Image (cartoon, rainbow, N blue to C red; front, side):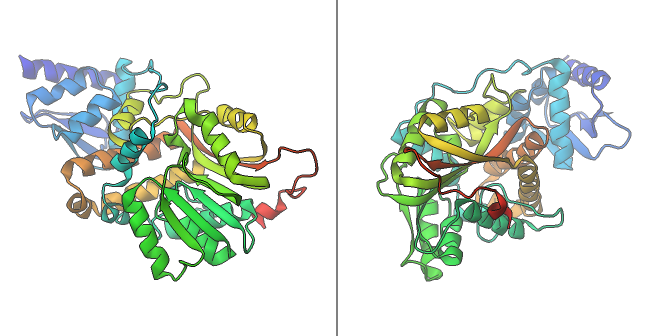
Length: 398
């Protein structure tokens, strides 16, 4: 009876869904959802078929992570199929708000960062570029390699900030130190990075010493709320997604307090696509919150600009990098796929399955405009008078 119901559930999906996939049940029955499927979804036992009765991206992902469902072939096709299955039944189309009241104490935030970033340095090194830049790259041509595009992103940020030799530069949420090191080496600044990840802190400082940059570059294990100092330039790249919507005003006030008058701040981060709902639908938002970024929250661009303005920042430039992030994530996902056995060895089967879905799913979500990403450039301009910023934007793209 259970098998019959499962077959009917798949047949019902087949009437409503056209997707490049073939579904194979544990008893050998198979169902093609297109004339030329590029992926095979294998349901490994009767209980696993529950995910196909009322599918959404969360329960399909959990079935895969648990090993109840497997797939072979193109992971992009599997992600597109999962979305099509979810939409066919209406499951997850009405989204719940994200964890907007999530507690963002220092202890909670440190634990969340450890969950995401302290898998292992070897794990990340397998699919990132050699500099281990874990944020959106900047592609000047379609043919750019990931490594080249990441250097171009570092330069793009440094040019926007108008870094000059001797500047005091702070990178908030510095990862493995790539931006701080590049700014110190190529632009002659005195660079400081801060992170909550112990793995990142350790490897970043090892890399700084190996490069001979320790006299003008350092990475501290520190919460942004606790850091003290005065800087000419501040960047925050891929970090404010961890801050929490309620904490954004305080976050921007903290940054403002670290900048001298006229100092320049660049905030680079993922943003929500929908002004009224800060979660991703179809169960994707719940998957990311549960397995990838605990307590992560995405503000819409309008909220970012509002809260920056309320903190007395003068916003000068906003740039959408969504197409660049779609390409970046596609590169990461392809690298992950190419080295999957090594990824499993550097973590474990469950972690590898989770991240496999995350990277391919995020590439698809960014491409589909479920979320976006923006760089917002501003100055601490609290007193009347002429801004230090040039009159045109030519300097950004020179």
